[in-house]
Length: 410
Ligand SMILES: *Cc1c(COP(=O)(O)O)cnc(C)c1O
Image (cartoon, rainbow, N blue to C red; front, side):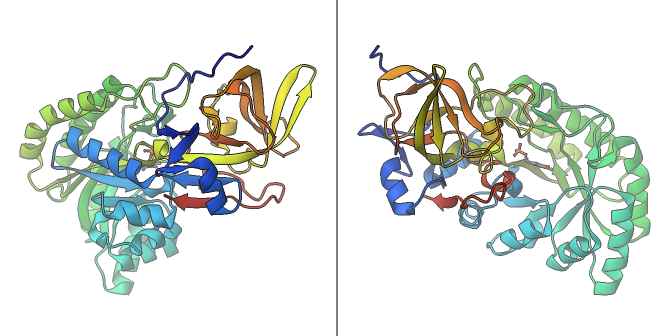
């Protein structure tokens, strides 16, 4: 069998001399330049290209915010500071990263349940918009404002009375720890007014990782409708309406990319009414994964090629501890393979199915389960695609005490 390897997935990077090029550099050369495996590499021009696609597809007055929890690497966040309109952070640590960029404080928002008093204080002192998620946060902000002699800027994060259909991760609708139930928002806005906080508007985030344009369109329509209902009870005109995001990327066989043009066209049709109903509002869409997910790869090296009862195992120096999502243990219900290939044999002869595993002593440490890969040998580089989001920082990197991976922006 000398069949040539055909990839089931479209390669998001060019190929030269049978090497995947990330940031224009062959992956073998990148490994030499980094000086070690494993590493994560993020392609600067792909990130820029993705923001450009969003600008083209979405109405001009939709501002694009980057949700940095998807990838908070400081160099990448600095790169995005020159491309997007604002940042959304979810902790004081992320706030520090974005305050080091030139993005103005007014274009930074802070969402997330369980904000500590210290975080609320830091956010107020920084002058960013705080998406409040409970009455407790409102009361604390009122105290903090008095103590610091500042007027905290608040928007209410709403737990909508609808959900983003067929979403990878539902973050709204039903009982949720996120935001304030829509029906309780009028009372909370009255409280914000009575306490003299600076009311900015609403943040309505309904879900994540959605590949279906019709589901996103449906959620956006319902978001505007809900905002209209809530605005009737608001202490002042909305100056901010954050429509959430939820744009997904394809990971698994059979998944198709989101039809972004269709989402953009439909949103353009909703905007005239929205502009007239919310004449003072800045409209924001916040995205993480969609901006950086496809621009990143995880690269590890084959340490050993073993055969156990007829099954080929490529044992690598990377694994679950560094890329939890690719192992299937970060929110997948049924484990499926991420797109994986041999980075220095992009087209190579195949000899059958192989499994890619890591060095951890657990069967969960699986990066590819019986995949049709080019024939890999010791020293070859295994590349996991779609690794730019929820990779490095979303993995238990200390588990088993192996060396840490390096992150580079190319
Ligand atoms: C996680 C999160 C995002 C980013 O989600 P992606 O799927 O990465 O786009 C945006 N907004 C809020 C409030 C979030 O919690």
